[in-house]
View (tube, rainbow, N blue to C red):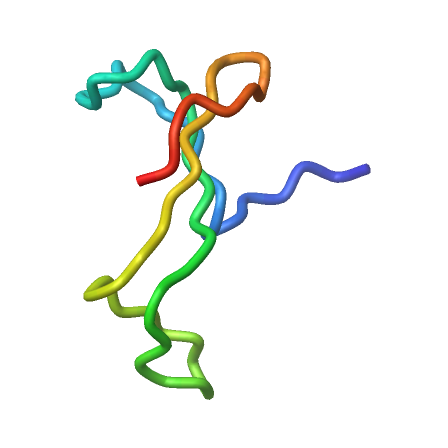
Amino acid sequence: MKDQKSSFIRQYVRASRSPWDDSSTILLLADVVDKQTLELGFTNYVYLHRDRVGSVCVFS
């Protein structure tokens, strides 16, 4: 399977500034600004923070 970069999952390339021991985030909810271009707004959003092995740290 070819590795593809997702705009919904972000693997950190530097140390996280969050108070949790997380290494990646997954965007679960965001405002849709434009359906045609899939432009997202971040007035209301939910992220899932995961550690290095994929275990859930926290929702924010």
